[in-house]
Image (cartoon, rainbow, N blue to C red; front, side, top):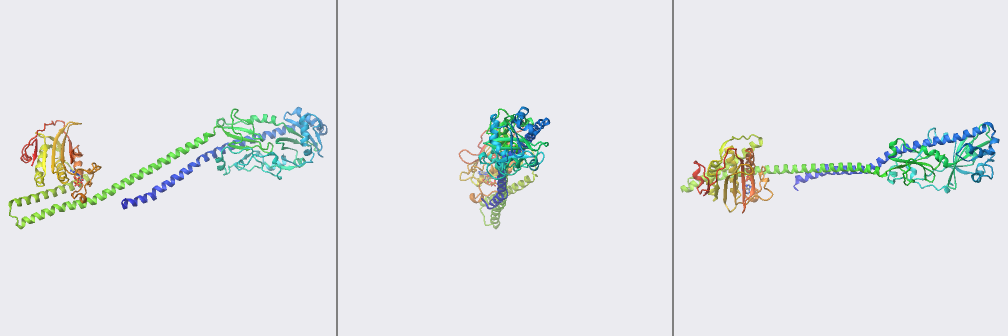
Length: 633
Ligand code: ADP
C-alpha cells in the first residue's frame, strides 16, 4: 500500500471503523438485556395483580373472622358466656359451617370446650392444644390481634409481595421451626426463570421484605388485652388456623374456633380469578397452600410446576406460607417476543455495519481514484513536456543543419525538411489534443456539424499521414466504399479521431509495421459506419481494455515501454465519437495487434455502397473522387 493510502487507512480504522465496532458491540450487549427488561416489565405488571388479589383474600379473611365474631355475639345475646362455653363447639358448628372445632378458654386457662371425649376432631384438638391454650406451653405461631394488626399492617396493607430476595431460598421444613422469637417466613416456591431472578435483584417498586414473623409465646401473650384475633400455627406439617374472640360483656372467657380449611378454601375460590379478561389469555393465577399445592386455580386445565411461579405474593399471617402464584400460560411467548426484539435490533445493527462497510469501501475507492488521477495528472505534465521537447529538438537540429548549408545533397535536404514537417505535425497534433481536451473538460468544445463524406475524409487523412508512415517504413492497406459515404458530423473532429488512432498504431507497433484501415457500412443492429484501424503491434494488456479510454491513463507507460504519450488520444477520440452519437471500441486483433473502431450512426437516407478492392495508392485520390480500396506504399 502506498504511504498516503496507508495513512488514510489508519485514520479510517481509528476514527471510524473501530468506534463503529465498539458501538455495535455495545448495542449487541444491550440486546442481551432486552429479555430481562421485558420480563421485568411483565413481572411488575403481574406482581401488581398478585398483590391486589392477595389483598382481596385478606379482606375476605377479615370478613370471615368478623362472621365468627357475629356468631359468638348472637349466641351470647340470650345466654351468658358461662352458659354458652361448655356447649360452644356444638353450638358454633350448627351455626357456622367454617368451624371445625369451637373452643372456649377461661381467663385462668381452663379449656371449657370442646369437652373431653366426644368426636375425633374435638379429641385431637384437645390433645394438640390443651397445653397451649391453658398457657402451660410456649408455641411458635403467627399471631395477629387488633393491636399487632394495626402496628404491622397499616390499613389496606395486608398483602406482602414475595420478592426475588426470598425466591431463591429453600422450601421450609415445618419441623425446623425452632428458631428465635422472630423468624423470616420462608417461601415454598422458587422462581420460574433463574436469569430473571438474577435480574430481579434490582428491587421492584412494590418490593418489601416480608413483615410476617413467627412469634414464640403462650396463648395469653398472643391474646393480650385484645378483643379478637387470629393464630396460625403448624402442627405436624398441617396448618391450624384459629380465630378467637373475647366478648366485651364477659372478658373472662375467650371463644375460638379451629377453621375448616377445606371449606374456607372453597369460599376463597371465586376470588382467585383474573380481571381484566385480556390477562386470562396470558397468565394463570393459583392460590397455593403451605405445601405449594394449588387449592384454587383461575385456568382449570392449566398444568405446570406449581413451585415455580413467574411472580408470587404471600397471603399474610392469617394463612402463613400460602401464596398467590402467577404463571405464564406460554412462558415461551415472552422469550419469543424478546427474541424478536433482539433479532430486529440485531438485523438493524448488521445493516448499519454493512452500510458503514459499504460507505467506507466507497470512500476508499473514491480516494484511490482521486489519488490515481492526481498521479496521472502529474505524469501527464511530464509526458506532455517530454512530447513537446522531442519534436522541438528534432526540428531545431535539422533546421540548424540546413541553415549551416553543410548539406548539399538535395535528396538529403528534402528528407530533412520532411522530418521537420512531420515533427511539426506531431507537435500540432499534441497541442490540438491538449487544447481540445481542456475545452471538453470545461464544456466549451463546439462541433461544426455538417454533411461530411467519410470516404473523402479518410483519403485526405491517409494522404496527409502517408509520407510519415513511409519514412517509418510502415505498410498501409485500406478498404473503402467506391462511392461517397455521407454522415452528419464535424469534419475536423472526425479527422482528429482517425489521426489519433493512426498515431497510436505507429507508436505501439513493434517489428511488424503493418497498418490496415477499413471503412464500411454495417446493418446490424442498426445501419452504421464502421471505421477500423488495425495494427500488428504490442496490443493492449489484458484488464486495461476499458481503462485506456480514461483520461491520462496509459497502459504502456513511458518508462517501461519507451513510448511517449499524454493519455489523451483515446479519451478525445471517444468523446468526439460520443458527441456524434457513436463510439470508439477496442478489441484485440486476431493473429496479434489491436483493432480500434470508430462507429458512427448513418443518417436514414444514406445507402450502403458495395466496397470494391483497388490497388491504387491513396496519394492519387487526394483531390479526386474517393477510392474504393487500396494498398500503400
Ligand atoms: P497515449 O498518448 O498514451 O498514446 P492514448 O489515449 O492515445 O494515449 O492511449 C491510451 C493508452 O492505450 C496508451 O498509453 C496505450 O497503452 C494504449 N494504446 C492505444 N492505442 C494502442 C495500440 N494501437 N496498441 C496498443 N496499445 C494502445
